Image (tube, rainbow, N blue to C red; front, side, top):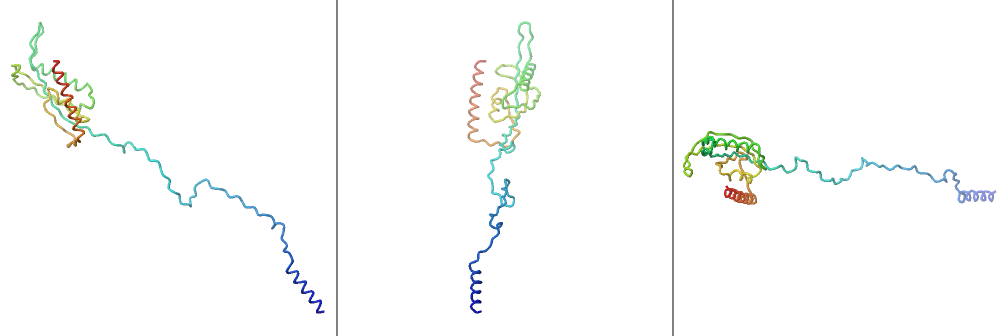
Length: 204
């Protein structure tokens, strides 16, 4: 009896030690993983990295504004001398000649465009007479004052170099700042205009 019990214990020990674990067929099959979809749009939960932007084109307001125009008031006194009669045509007095010249010049200022100059207004003044010692006669002057807007000081030379020029008044701006380059261009233009006027006087 004791020998039988000993063999029974050895058999139980053998089963526990060398028995194989039974696994089902479903457990032996490899498990399939569900495919994950990749996002083509940026993840809102992740912090976005900064992207360098192209420089924006400058708007018209950001571009350099053009230089303001210079507003001036200039006076011209047109001289009239008496014209003696020729052949059968009657002569003209100094007053009539002065008024005729002033009217012709006023029409020219109004209708002939000048680059860099914009004529804004014209005003006539009362005529006055002065004795001309060279001509030995009484000369009549017809004043006219024009108001203009010019792009630069160089454009004023076409006015101040005329024989009829009397005075100029700067209205706007209240102060002008000139660089060395501006002064060089101004004096160069002045010399060029003066030489041209002298040549015109020689042909008269």
